[in-house]
Image (cartoon, rainbow, N blue to C red; front, side, top):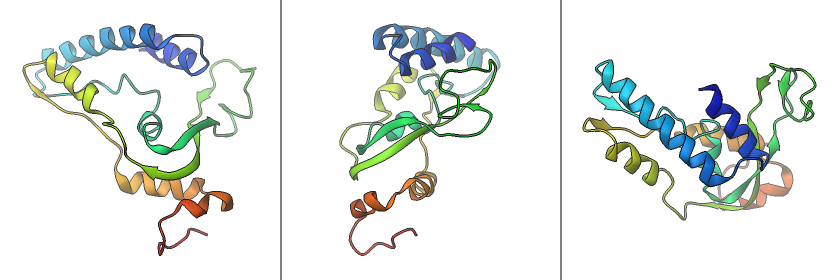
Length: 158
């Protein structure tokens, strides 16, 4: 869905409002639900259409983490090419900063699941990143100044 991907990018840059993005996501998700049903699938997902990346939207809903731009990866649209001087570059993952003790304080994917469930009579499913995947990613992103947020007695990544 090129239209949806472009809207996610524009939303990250503040060029598309949350309501407009949500309306487009809702339409695209209804379309992908109908497609999954039409090919005979019994487990129906939202196609990950509410996410700009698999894990980023999940992490942003945790207290203690915040978005911090994009990872600077060669040959991608990232910190190395913020002006997008080369068209067609790959989309670099978003970067995060640990700004406090990580805490789950709100439902993370419940509303997305409810939307799928309300739009299909089949089994609705919702994908979430595994704790092991997030632990590895957060371990790689820890800086010495953020290590103080690790629980006491835990092995500190080095």
